[in-house]
Length: 234
Image 1 (cartoon, rainbow, N blue to C red):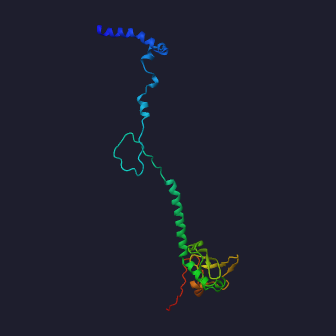
Image 2 (spheres, rainbow, N blue to C red; image 1 turned 90 degrees about the vertical axis):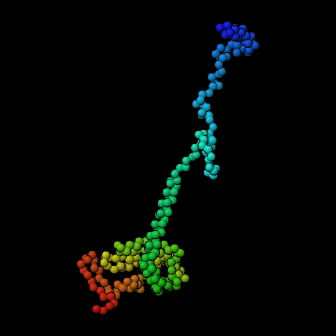
Image 3 (spheres, rainbow, N blue to C red; image 1 turned 90 degrees about the horizontal axis):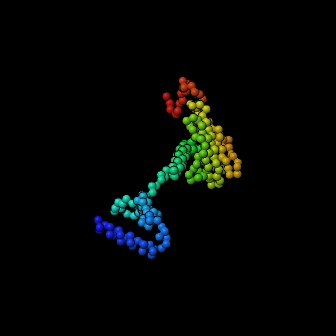
């Protein structure tokens, strides 16, 4: 009991001496401020966790990670790029579809027959010259070509040694079992003139052989059957 009271008596005896030597602000301050540190200097564990530094996330080409650390920053997730690639995909699909349809028209026998008829036409050779062919390296056939429903209306650019122009060809079939009839076959020149090439006759009717047999228009009646002799004897 005496051992605990002696240090207290000595501390109480030294306290007036310390107060005389201390600055006036400390003497006037309450005992709570002298005994405890300021509250602003204290930091909670939550604040310590918030100010904790993070290691940067790995970048492409940094190499393999040799250790796993909880304080490593997560990498940025790349956003989906379909919004940029989808319009390009539809554009490529549209261009490919147009190219396929144009190739289908170009490979049709109608285009080959009209080009051959223009080469053998006297008026066409007079206007364009010899060696008549497509004007473009990749010919573009514009217009409608629907042989199933009997509608053909096409045009494409042609050239010869003397000049060049645009050839128009239109034909229709009056009935499903009828023969195609040419309504227009003309050549449009660079000066704006449009020359009719059907004045000397319809060469396409001779190509199909319709003028030889003079086939009648059968209409839509499928019960009528016409017997035609095609170059052989019975």
